[in-house]
Amino acid sequence: MKPRFYDLSMPLSEKTAPFPLDTPFSRVETMRMEDGDACNVTVITMSVHVGTHVDAPYHYDEQGLRIDEVALERYIGKANVFTVYPREVDGIPIITADDVRELSISAERVLLHTETYPEYAAFHANFASIEPDAIDVLAERGVRLIGVDVPSVDKATSKTLPAHKRCREREILILENLRLEHVPDGDYELIALPLRIAGGDASPVRAVLRMYAETKDMT
Image (cartoon, rainbow, N blue to C red; front, side, top):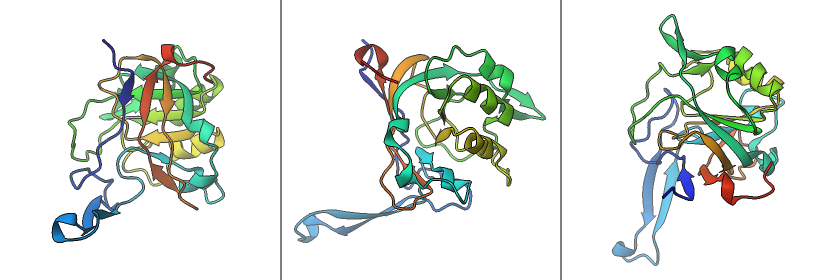
């Protein structure tokens, strides 16, 4: 029997790999009932780009919307999940325009499954990035959000972020660090709401998929 929901989120712990030079996740208990306190209270420290998260346009455009300004409906609605097999260019996996042109897209949200990870995977830089031309193809097909199961839509070494910037030009939102290896390709409802971080450039999310057949009136 298929589950009603698929959790796409990376667990957040000290084992969760951050992007190089980014602030890792840490957790400290500041109050503990076993020490006589009235309740348990925890403080966490982390970059908003650790684990499964959405980028606000402000992350890569000084004039872009902050995360608390992006319309919430952009993160809820019908989504297509596709497994893609990136081709290697000079030993680096890349999702090309030809790769996405073959997809039978029927939703404004597209999630691309490229890799399979253990629960706590060490960061590796040789992940599949997306060519800007592929983003153009997705935009022309009506896509308004791209979700990927890797740390970035751009190469790990990129300083110019061409894929991020093409998403900005095409008004496409970005959802990164998904876990999709347990999700069959198909149609779903995506729910990936960001925290209301005033002025934020990104936000962690608890991303889930609901079976599309159980939903109505989704866009």
